[in-house]
Image 1 (cartoon, rainbow, N blue to C red):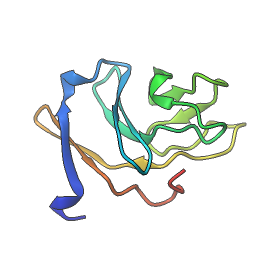
Image 2: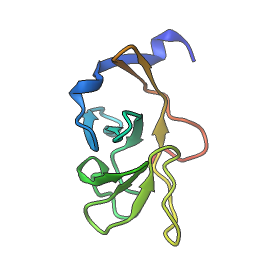
Image 3: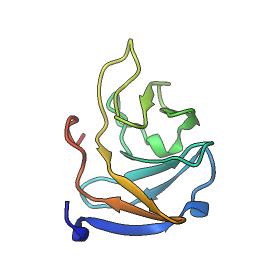
Image 4: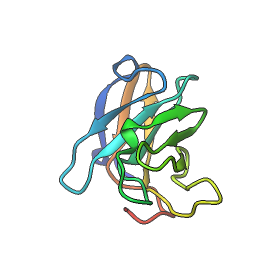
Length: 113
């Protein structure tokens, strides 16, 4: 990835612990999550089950629970937790100090659903 793939989206304190912030895109919104341990993950804001807004889900550890049908999605790889099957695209995130940078190029391995 080159530097122009990354955008600055704010600082760590812009996202509440166990919460999310949305980066709006015409191709589909990206939910940027902050865990209790201040880890930051970015996932397409669309549950692979019925398209529910993951950004409105409950974060526990490194998993978000979709608010529509309680599917659990792993924040680090976008995979649904068994027995459910499916995947939400994930995006690279990096921290520089307290500044958050997001790549708009999804990680490989999951369709951009």
